[in-house]
Length: 491
Image (cartoon, rainbow, N blue to C red; front, side, top):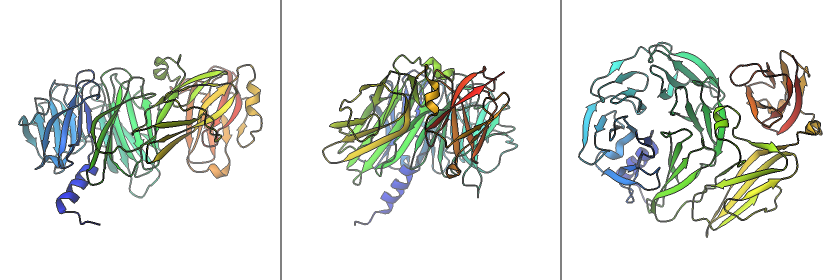
């Protein structure tokens, strides 16, 4: 094995440490990307005005730019910031073009926030500037604790969010919120996420509308809230792990339901350099895949999702449609493939029974029987294969025979049932770690998600917004085992 030069090692560390490598501009379809040049020796700033389908190199410097950790666009057209690994803040008023950068401040965090007000930029929760980073006003940040993982501002003035962890607590991540411009922070939510998980927040177009991307080496999940992070729903799950993976980034767009992922792959000592943009305009349910930077061989990474074609996108904002695909039998499901690589074969197994059901790239499949279905896609190029299994992804019900759902399932108890004020779900002790149940109505729409560290979970009959549900029959599903039972809420 050849020895790596010090320059190569430092460059590798710099690439791995990119913190915010995609940001939206003020115009629809406009994004900036911090990535690699085809040579692999320069960290490069790219600009796109067509949702990432094509990109233009704005600046590529091998002297200092490879130390850039963060880029962030201003609300001002053409305004762009970057922060180096040493905390140096720079600003361009010309789309990041070479020669347009001005040094502004030192000791600035990688986690900067901007894009709401022209010239306004936040240095995490510590301070903010109203003059394009020339001068900063400090915040008290009373109530802050632990180690910072991410901070984000809201579209509503003075509102913001801080994600932290605590040393010695490996299974919890904490969400702090502010309504007075980070003068005071209040603990709002404790997530059952791992200490080392990477958490990214991105504000969307409305006040109180925010996305959260939670990832580690085994999963990558997208969450959404439109009520100032009071309630969250899981939108999608991705297969984003690869040994050739150097960095992934996430950012919302400028229109409703619009968001982006950027994926950088480098292998064989920069002989292969590829950048991919995943663009969604339906709240991250389906994606268009763009490949604007290509050099050498491509990686192979399988990803897909699905939805019922007549499902209204507005239902997501109304908390009626989320990560799982549900509907009454027979259920027509459209699958969306956005796998990465020079794929020549797609093998779909729509019920994970080992039998290939389709070789199409984006098939439609009709489920004629009730129950939960796991779906697996396997892709091939000329040299390799990659698979993605989405367990208990499709749920098909029959409104005329709800009682059949309970047959053959005795591993989750519900007491009392029927109930008026609260019902207790007792799950098998083997599921002790990180339990979650999902409550559905008879239309298959999710009413609430409930989490617990223990094998008992209590539901008080309320929905995501804390409002009491109407008396009716509901379905509760143990998310880990796919066990579903009928429960009855009375007056």
